[in-house]
Structure formats: C-alpha cells, structure tokens
Image 1 (cartoon, helix red, strand yellow):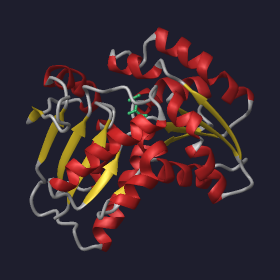
Image 2 (spheres, protein in one colour):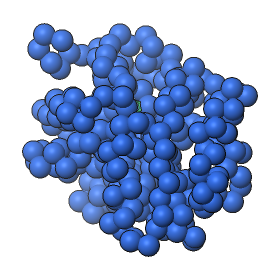
Image 3 (cartoon, protein in one colour):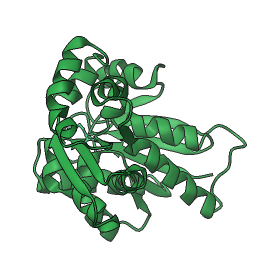
Length: 266
Ligand code: DGL
C-alpha cells in the first residue's frame, strides 16, 4: 500500500486527487489545501516556493511515501527545489502534461493556459522544448477561470464569453493541442472544448500525473488494491468553503476535513 501526500494552494488540486484516487483505489491519500494562503497564481516565485517547502516538509513528516504537487504554480516554481531537499519522490504536474502534449500534437503547434505565475515562469514552455525542439508554443494566462470554476459556472454563458476571449490567440495561432495547465481547468473541458472546436486535443495534466504516480506505485510494488485506501483532507482555513466547493470538484461530499496550522504564528 502506498501513502501519498497531495498538495495544492487550495481546492483545485482535487482534480488531481480525483484522478489519483481513480488510478490507485487502494492508496492512502492525505490531501493538503493551503486555503488560508490561496491563490498562489498571483504570488512571486519566492513566496510560492517557501509555502510549497513548508507543506512538503509537513507531509513528509506525516510519513508519506511520495509527494504529489497538484498545484501547477507550485510545480512550475518549486519542483526543482522540492526534489533537491526532500528524500521522497516528488511528482509535479508540468512534466506529465508537457509530455502528453508533445505526444498528442501532430502539427507541432501547442497551446498552454494557466495562472499568471505558471505562464510567466515559462515552466511548460521549457518542459515542452526539452522534449521536442520542433514545437511552437503559444502560452497565455487565464486568471478569471479559477473564480468562475469555484462559483460553479462551468458551462455558463459568462464563462463561455471569457473563454472565447482568452482562447482567441490559441485559435488564431492554429494550435492542435491545448494544455490545461491549472488545477481548475479540467472542470471547464466542455466549455473550452466548444470554443476550441472538436479537433483540438485538450491535455489534462491531472490525469497524466495520476498515470505516472500509478506507474511508480507499480514499479515499487506498492500498489495494493485489496482494501479501499483511506483519505483525509487538511486545510489551513476553515473547512466550510472547502466542503462546499469540494462538491463541485468531486460530485460528492467530502468527509474528514480538518483545519491545521503548519506554520508557527500564522
Ligand atoms: N492551484 C493553482 C494552480 O494550479 C490555481 C489556484 C491558485 O492560483 O492558487 O496553478
């Protein structure tokens, strides 16, 4: 049995949780949402890296076998530092998403969308370029998608208008593949798919990451599906909003949500 620590700036990482749970029903999962300090997408690299380190150390202290960085902004800014300092494997969402995009694209024109932090870090652009030098990437930030998802407006006309505006450069640039480089965006697949048209492949970094975590568990002989794994949710702000918005993400109610404080004096 594998014990996984999955963390995010808040609630969006539940898209990763959902995929990891589907891939590894027997895993014990501790999900950590930094709801007191969300959003990360507008914060500096230094701040996001500091927060990510605090959380990752906390999870390692709780005895997890591996850390999954569900937050794209944390993965973009902090993955190298986390891998350097932690003595457990660390999975991020950027590399699996980039790999899947390069595999999926036939024309070599790939779009990437994410928070301002993720896009300005250049992490997806660099990861794609490392895999294939022959790809053109159009990257843009879509900051209004996060609040729209948390409002539950997944297919609303307002969301469609916002998507049309944000995705215009990708349509104009003729991308055949679009990376959903933010935890919240998989919930907008229907709307984004409608705007981009049926031929454009949407890459769900959450799903690709879950595949890698599953492969790791299998390779280490830690995949054990005899009994359903336990799950627990820890958040840094009051659990009430996490509970409410969590329903939008998972389509069922979350149990065992606790508020924790991992930083002295905060
Ligand atoms: N979890 C963040 C991400 O995937 C989105 C929300 C935030 O800005 O913190 O980048």
